[in-house]
Amino acid sequence: MNNNKWVLIIAIVFSLTCCEDVKKKDAIATTVETKEELISRVFAFSEKQYDSLIHRIENNKPLLQPRGITEEGELRLKPFQDWTSGFFPGSLWYIYEYNHSNKWKDYAEQFTLALDSVKYITNSHDVGFMLDCSYGNGYVVTKEKRFEEVLVKGARSLITRYRPEIGVIQSWDTTPDMGWISERGWDVPVIVDNMMNLELLYKAFEFTKDSTFYNVATKHALTTLKNHFRDDYSSFHVVDYDSKTGAVRSKQTAQGYSDPSSWARGQAWGLYGFTQTYENTKDTIFLNQAKGIANYIMESKKVPEDLIPYWDYDAPKIPNEPRDASAAAITASALLSLQQYVPEKSVAMKSYAEKILRRLSTDNYLASYGKNQGFLLMHSVGNIHTGEENDKPLNYADYYYLEALTKWKKVD
Image 1 (cartoon, helix red, strand yellow):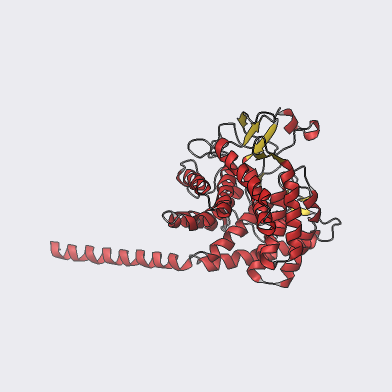
Image 2 (cartoon, helix red, strand yellow):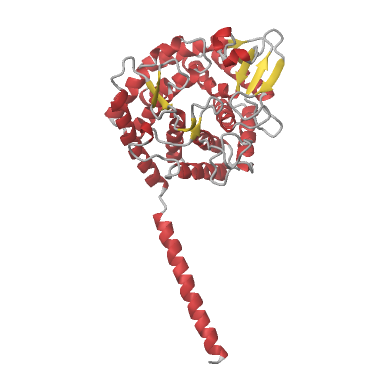
């Protein structure tokens, strides 16, 4: 056979191979869910999963909120005083916002109204989590005056924890009855999570025009910005202040691996909290802080390729460490808010958030119907040191997952 015939045969084989590769790629492309298909699938699943869960617990008196799963595999229910109590009602409001079904509005109201007494709590900084996620989301979709009244009263309870000599809202009380917190020897401990509670104060300012709410929230954010973050925008978890002088006594962790490590959910709380603070103040100091934290997360070599972080960026046994789906969901939601204020990074932030949401929506993280005790996401870490919520579902992972999907639906 002469050389020309060999060339012709090779060309034909190459052409056929290329055609097959193109067909395979086209076939794969057609099986990838669109954004709308994915969101529709997840919300349909959420309705089925939560409907089953609610029927198991709605007759409890008083009505308890599902938080997660015990070490024995049982449903973990908590009263209104628990810091996570607002997340499940908030998830129900997101489902109602998506499907506009009165059934889900009734569910959301039922679990929200069970938290009415939270407005009187003054011994917790998490009143913001508890009320803004429940009553706050309820107000967004219903504009009911009774929800507004609870939010304002709750905000008044929250600012009783403000320490003007320091410029912070104290996170944890340090009285002798506070267990392990008392044992740490802290004076006025403030955790980065507390940035998430400021939104309640900004809402109260919006409702009442009482500048006290605005000033307390903004001062707390400024103090946190000054003392909680390292030069690379990674965050300490706990900063302890001297109650008399306002000086920083120590910078430590409670839920991270070590004092100098980067606790994954703490990074997400900071990103989300400073994005919210910028939205409410339009002060670019907070926008720049949020951008810096976003860059730290998005450019980190310590985050796995699928963007679902390990529970701590510096955990010692990576890759044999638990992932934290809750940190990923919070990050995705925060980025979808932040991207609209950062046009030069908008595409990258939306892409990063989308990759997280698509990963969380696979069998690796999204439970099967009837499994996971009714929760949506698997593989989150609450506080690894307590051994109670390691590699478990958590109601706040579900909440920020549905919130991020709700935001993604509205983004181009």
